[in-house]
Amino acid sequence: MGDGEAPSSSKGPTPFVRPGSEPSNTLQQIALKYFLSCSAALVAETVTYPLDITKTRLQIARKGAGAKHRTGMFRVTYDIVRNEGASSLWRGVAPAIYRHYIYTGIRLGTYEAMRNSWFDKEREKTFPLWKSASCGLFSGAVAQFVASPTDLVKVQMQMEGLRKMQNLPPRFTSTWHAFSSLHKQHGFRGLWMGWIPNCQRAALLNMADLATYDRVKHWLLRETQLKDDWLTHALSSACAGLAAATVSTPADVVKTRIMDQLRHLHDHDHNSSAMPPRIYKGSVDCLMHIVRKEGFFALYRGFIPIYIRMVSPLVPHVLGLL
Image (cartoon, rainbow, N blue to C red):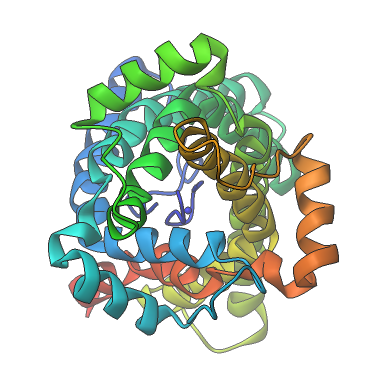
């Protein structure tokens, strides 16, 4: 769900194709899924990206850090348009799209490989829920680790609008300039800053999404008069998105705060009179600092845009089935 992801992982929306719904035994089928997933992600990511940059701005706002912050989702979006221009709502969309091509391919390939090795067709009629959730957790974490540098670049570019408002010179001229600059300044390993909460977010999101979707769908078919149609699918997906957003948002906030440190470090290096930024020792230190200084619910900043991004692919899917 970066940021948020359509039921699958997040960190932004991915196509409404749930891995594991049907067996995939050939490379051609995996390649087809990859092509369709990335094509749909290109459109979905572009359309819903303003929610992602709004989510990021909400997450970096610190309670009590100077001026009073207006932290409503619509207020933040309005302020971005008013102060930075409407086009700023899509600043950083390129690395977000690149992420999907990396993340989706690795996640689908890893998931299908694990599923084919675990699925005993002679003994099991359907793929067990616990196996599906485990495959989703592992494949999501592995894919997110590889794609983590694209998330880092995306967050840096999303923050450039704030620096412009502070009359600071731009750090980057393009996505690839951002990659090369960060590599020169922080080294190859520096591109993976924040990878631990990023992988935690993806793993939790995938696991919660897959487990909740199957459980809710089976409960609806068993306990209600609903049939296996678009309404059951929509309700199950909405519940799955809610569960995924609930368990993954705290890790997403921690990831954003850690990645945003690079902006503060850069500005301090170029302005020695500025107050030195607080450098987190790790994910746990960042999480505890947020809870201690800003309260537990600060871990859920950006929850609404995250959830909206997760369920947004439902709209065209449901309309197409009506």
